[in-house]
Length: 193
Image (cartoon, rainbow, N blue to C red; front, top):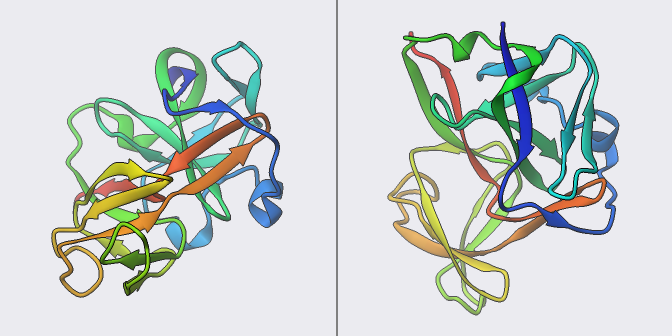
């Protein structure tokens, strides 16, 4: 068990509330499809704050969230019906049980899509070349913002049957009064066997 104080990531911004459906009622916790990855279980109730000091997310004791950013910049992954939203963890307060945060562990990682993504060969999103299905897993990727909520993905053959790069429309995730716009592919970790 380690102590962490949560801060909201730099990509967060004020947004209108959204309809999260089943994921909203689940408070963004890990879904059954992804239960084999590194998880943080909250040992006490905790509140993630937004940049203005308001509550972005209230977490209750016993709730479980995926971890990303290991080992140097741990964050929980709020799972949403349209993607994922990272909330940074910072040492200080808020007790969690997270075996993957122990010093000296060997971790493996892979990237997971948190939403279905159509991938296009062109920035105008006219020529669809493949679809990355929700919960598809692949090797390391990179991406960069192009314009008009379009990102270029550098897949390095990790998704889409060896495709090297393509373009996707960004997804928008909102929880309460916080939002995130980006590519819903997140690096997840697991203990190395």
